[in-house]
Image (tube, helix red, strand yellow):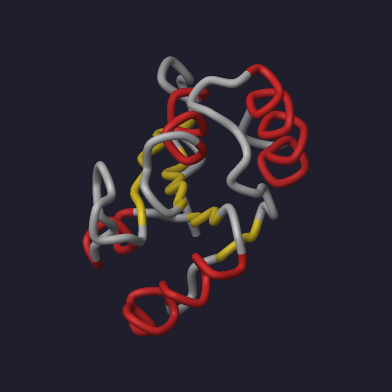
Length: 116
């Protein structure tokens, strides 16, 4: 059981780690009860996801079903016992897009309400 005194560790995953997942990570940059990181599944990602990222995270959010599929295929063992949540946010937003920020906040609230 996680220690309620420690920040909850969230990992956000998209393809390139340039727009969606990076924006999600930045939402929590100054949050006292959440630590967030982000990574991408593709070879050209700004930060490419590793087993270390998955081991660090308590909760993993992906933007699309294909991201979850790639993680399961490559890192199945590292995902055991970890919540893997698909936010279903298509690759149609730029980094920091106000519509993306609003959508992330609305969707994440349902999963993180006790922490945020």
